[in-house]
Length: 245
Image 1 (cartoon, rainbow, N blue to C red):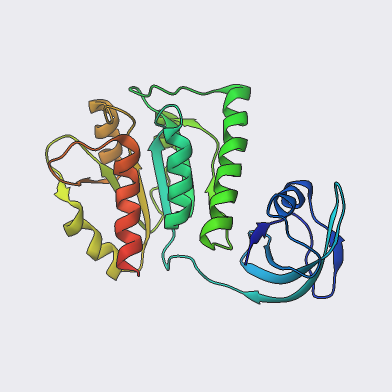
Image 2 (cartoon, rainbow, N blue to C red):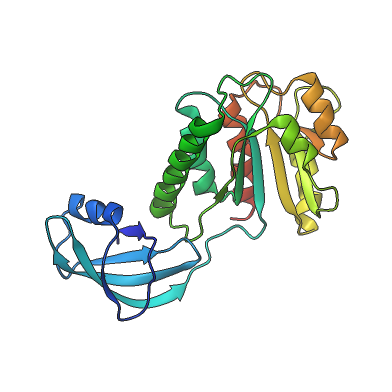
């Protein structure tokens, strides 16, 4: 059954017009009066609904019963990532949403190709929120990930709170790393939230790597092969998602 994210109050028995974006999607799918659909508001529940009227610009639905749906990972995962350039960041946001990321922090690092600030960063953030919303519709999530404003690496690193009880890791190209498969299980057994820092194209520079370690992030490696920035970030999410089934 088609799923639509809507920013509107939902309640059993409500008859209302869908927001413009959802209405256009219903029209594209050629749904007709009487056809069923699922609505969700990004806060953890789903509502059954049926189309009752199709107009040129307005689609009206009748909302039915709601049910809480939990398709989230049992541990919150934050991904702080040096933004890859071009469409690769869109792809990362889409796949990270599908894999269950809780919070996504885009970073500008020393080796970043994509550098955003001001209004351009705000526009990109709004675009990525749209990408995440579409991914949530497709994959069945009822809770949207938090997409935080773009920050410079140093600003983000200095703002890390030392008292947060989460397991923190940095994907490091320097020496002194542990294999990811060895470092992760203790954190999972402790039931901690997880934070992963992954660099941009070319990885973190030596200074950023050292700052991350000084902030308490455990250096880990994914193996001997050189992965693209977006591949490395998504690999850790896929591994955690697979472990949780």
